[in-house]
Image: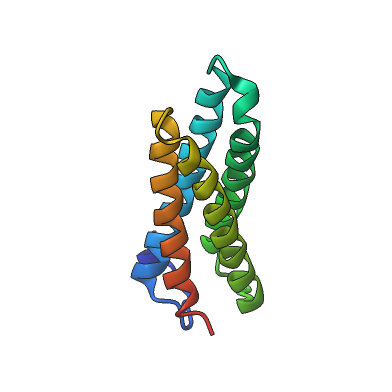
Length: 129
């Protein structure tokens, strides 16, 4: 879709932008699914922090992917702020999920997705002026 965009993307590398958008949307879905799977666990109260972190991360990733998909009236301050927030949300969620990864497969998968999204956002931030 980015290749069809009629306007210049400025300093953003279209390939890195695409990778970041895809990572954000995927991470949002994985975090949502992880929270849902954690809700079905027998000791759900032990996973309250994980579920909250999943839902926060899913929302931040979704918003980041959506905003990065729009370029009309591009504002570099916003384009920088959202991936920065996404890095923090993914780092936090990834750490919490890693704590549960030994017992819950969904948490292992979620931690991996969070790490991938965190890295994609960091790489994009390196190209935003």
